[in-house]
Length: 229
Image (spheres, one colour):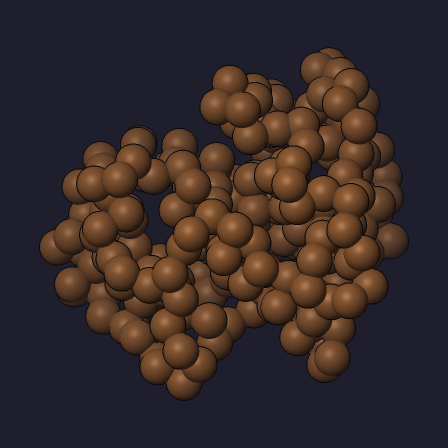
């Protein structure tokens, strides 16, 4: 849910102002690639194709998935991923999986407490092991990493960028926050490509694999910039 909605006629100008404040070359290039995507969620067959792409990435990272129709109480229950959700949610959870150390991969919701889609909220809260500030940092990194993957896959990354409140504080700290989180991902070797090299260059038209990426140079309730989604 967008904390401060931007009217569509004003969106282009807001994105221009954000881009002008990005003084890091690689971060600016990443944002340009995000901006090239749609600001509207996919529907129908396109949405399903995007979901299959996301599940292909989960397979690449060795992330177990539940059979369709399982309906677990969590997007991630410490053992497997709920696949009956949108592509951008799946990519966000994969990002958490990649970022989490092995001990937190065994915890529901990665030990971060309940997310917006968590049904068994008390169980998720009792499994939380990360302090609030740590949760916010982890959520920001997972948010941006998932968005970078969406951009690389040609999915509507800009829709997630807006929904997950990366423009919140546009006139204050939004661009700096983006740059700082992007830099943390770079230090972990997760950008600028945004996708594993062995998945690059395949034919995305099949609906199962990924497309090209740019060269080097949070759903149900309000969340902070880059927050739980």
